[in-house]
Length: 475
Image (cartoon, rainbow, N blue to C red):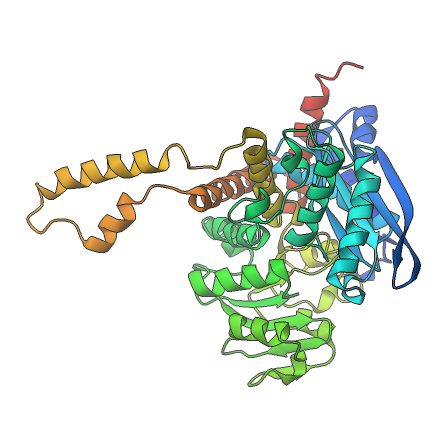
């Protein structure tokens, strides 16, 4: 079928997600009532509140959508953006449901958003707004450690999560699990090591696992390992920055292009990610970054020739209109929904491999799960076993050195003697999660001849797991 001659099938993010879901469900032969129950959003709360700022009342509108409560709490970020809308929040909540099921975190799916430009307000003003929004959500159990647990998203970070957690604690002073009401908090407020970079680290682990399967790499028209692969990153925010940093510094990939709101920069010899990030953080425009080619039309950056394209900003950036111009043979969706359903079809027809968002950006919710579990258990990971592991390793090495004429190399000895702390355990758990999820997708795709891609396989894995939980519901 020639998808390039078809008219667009979708009109929005939510419809695109539902279309992808429906395609997967047809291959699972689920009862129609079960399929519909899983597909629909359970509820969406819309709130409008006012905060007195700068001498007058300012009104704000926000949402919190709960897509599924087949497992509780429901989990999902809260974004701050002037583009937030009901359909977007519901689409993101649905993706969270399927994402959590795919990587086997015991949560339902939820998402929230506040229509606001966070850069338009001073920090103390943003705190008042955030606390009021948290209050409106918490009094309806839409922030609650056992019911609904937000996390950072676009426009929010650990600062906003700390404000929300503190507001919940003030409202519930006797709740001993109050810190577990949100994740993505600072370390000194109950956060966990490795959460800030978790989504970007997950993208790295996803690509590492992909390149462990030579057949999959060959199907994408590539060969070898990540070393030397050219990469274009769209969005150098938290996710894009960390993914680019880890891939270039640890795996030998070459970042040849970076796409931002105000344009794109290219250098076939490679861009220093740290230098570019520092340049942008200092407030300088992208066009002033030295030694690179610049174009004002950032959308053209997506069409730059490279081995791997990483859309890491927002949804619907690769569409029916530009999909046929994408040159990258491998796309990994670090953002939620960057490829629309019809663009997905066009890219598949052209032989492109897409590592889907359900899997690729699941690092954030995976480490959020670790943080939530840490808060519920009230103990830091590694606290009880780290020194015992070190003592056992030291005893083994001392015995080994008696058998080796030259002993053990000092650097290797230091590495082996070090017990796993929280950061090491978080990275290990995330790596294991990403490996297992990829294998699950791959096995389903291989077992179903009508399954066209990893995205459909990801939905199939997730929906099958959700349906199995629902079999045990008492209605």
